[in-house]
Image (cartoon, rainbow, N blue to C red; front, side, top):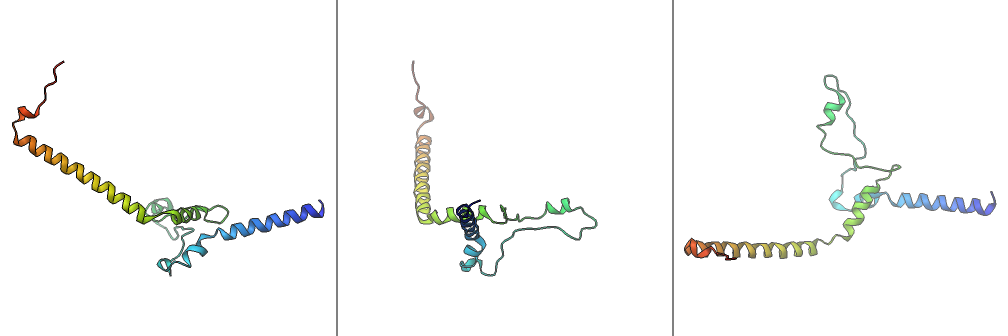
Length: 131
């Protein structure tokens, strides 16, 4: 190996290590957010001290699942927070309210039509299609 290729290898390795350290979401998200103050990131869980029940039977009762990781880094958690940074709750709530209002208008219209139909004679509501 030449000096230049060794230099490139060391530079690449240092850059890759810096990239992996910067992807550590537990440091970046949990330390800055006051909502998570005093909380911990669940990375591993195990059942110990079981004499009468097997470990498999008890593990079915564990509600929390540990965060998945790749090479010791919570990449999936990083993707979650990356998507959350683009998530606009105000726009989504506005869209939800608009859709709900549209559905409510349609429901009221259907109720009114049904009431009008019942008020008239049933035979007048039925339309006979002649072929």
